[in-house]
Length: 368
Image (cartoon, rainbow, N blue to C red; front, side, top):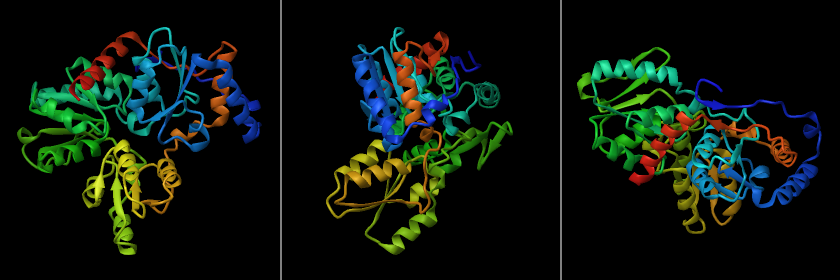
């Protein structure tokens, strides 16, 4: 068991799986699914590559999939084609008799990794000394189980990009200040949309152990932002938006709120992954979109809606590299290991961490 309260096994992918053809991998994955039957459920995140997500029983964003996993009481095994914090959340919400598998344990999340539990505990002590008992912690679900548990212990809750505003309103009704982690951009963009000025926000740098971007008296601060970000969404720029509009003023720019403040302000619309999907699905034929989010999702939207012109906002590819570590060889290995009764890459969250992380999640579910 590691310091964050969950146990991971890291066997290497056998070479036999690497040497299989794309077609043979697909055939054996399908055969394994059929053999496992109702004992198996495969979850596929929206950002997952097409040649993997085609085998998913359910697709969605991270929390949506975890909640679906919670409902799969007949399945003995949940194979989560996503990244490690998603598998953790699924393990927290599913029954003790069920197991959660992440096909490749190297499929992490750089944003989640930017909030380390030891650094958070040290920062919390400093913040309590400087600002007193005026802070309620809120964490994006894109965080480790250990971070969720910390938030749960301290009366806070989790949020998604879809419900962040409702969660912050709930939090402000209880404390003067919010510590928002690990993504500073979602926190900043959400708070600003609520009418909180940038002057009342500051960034905590866990590496330097100090504040950044403090524009006024500390007493005026209302939003304390953890210095973390998504490596995909920070690649989109205002210059890219300007270029799109110069090329075709009819193209609407829609971005995810994990993008930087300037990008969100310059875009025509911003919203969660689910919001972006809904907007494009409901748009009329002939609509033109430049989308600032993960490339696999954008390409899938373009394929599913040929009646519209849909393109990635950036000229360069913006994949979630850790998500893309889940490939057909790893998926097949995970499934055939289950058939053999020797599951690999199981994610298990320790009981104390799971209890408090679930507390934080349940608070959120009661809010919105």
